Image 1: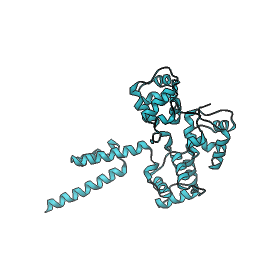
Image 2: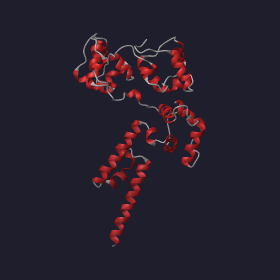
Image 3: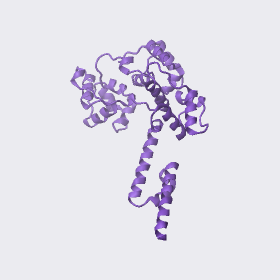
Image 4: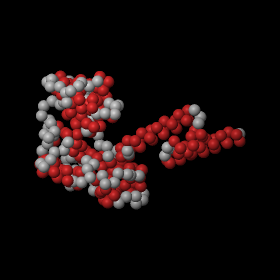
Length: 296
């Protein structure tokens, strides 16, 4: 059982309060079936500690409220609170093995100094907090107040998948008993925004449950209108990053007078269709202006 207190009956009560089925909660957690959720709620088993942040987030509760901790955190606690399994920590510190973190968590060998800022950033805590947690892993008692609490949110606090984002908005945009839009209402908003039938209520339900994960610009525009947020919120982080890179590439090309060459290369560098259309429209306008000057 993890260092945080896990009460399966409390989880069941919170799940029911959010009108989630066991299957829907399992989908939000990326599980293949609802069996683990049923086992947790009945007390037959307990989730790994690194799963607790995702469970709390899916249920719209703070992790300290839903799963209070016994005592001050050690290194393992910090890792689990950030939502990382131990076998993924090698990637966090830039090596191919999780052994350095495992040794430190078990009080065998201290962390190399070069790993400390990397782990503190990944865990969303200060270097001082990480070192204090390391001391506790080696059996050295360190009061929590010895290290000021970091205000940096951990990665596990941020909704990542589309289903998590929709659930997050349902809870935060419509609190205190207010009703979030139904699947049918969301579909109507999206279709009205698009001016066409682009989605049905069943497809909205699939997006909310995590059974479907892909959207179109028209759907994201409609979701943005429904929740009062930017459509970018619903895009994959990698997709947003790619658009930023494309925009920078376009600006750089314009600065160096290579906009024509950029358009000629087309989608070779990953320009979206919308971006390419705007580039071509700009080029056409520049061409007309150039021809007009020649006529004069």
